[in-house]
Image (cartoon, rainbow, N blue to C red; front, top):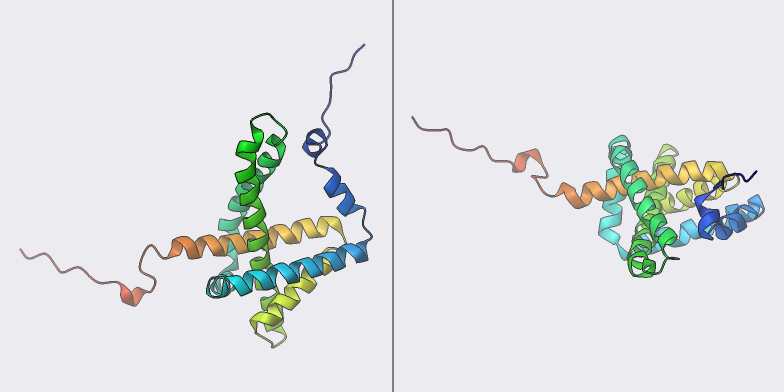
Length: 194
């Protein structure tokens, strides 16, 4: 009797699961050090290149983290899904034409917003200890990322929260300038004359 084929994982079927398995096979202290250094490097690059925007995004995510997370989580799933679909279709004949922009979108957006989210988490934790500076937030956020790297399921959860927080704050800044920013900027229309 012939059994029906089963699929264990999309990553295994597409041939791109080796990177994840190699990362999971690292010793936990090595994985924590790699994540600390990677988060620190990306956060310094993002905050250095996008100085005004990223500092504003960190402040926005700290002021209202619940709203930023609620906006960012669906967006994170969409961007991650589009990027994963790009990796998956890259093996098909017409796939690279569509896959390259999809993968580039994920490769630029996901690390950037995750670095903003880790910086916001680090700055919030540092402010509880009395140090409320952006560079301390970068350092503490990298430490949080490194500590979460000791256990693989923990880093998935923490990186998801950081990515959602950063993406939500970024979306709120990009689309938040459509209306009046402050209530005192609003004007009252004149009353109708009868």
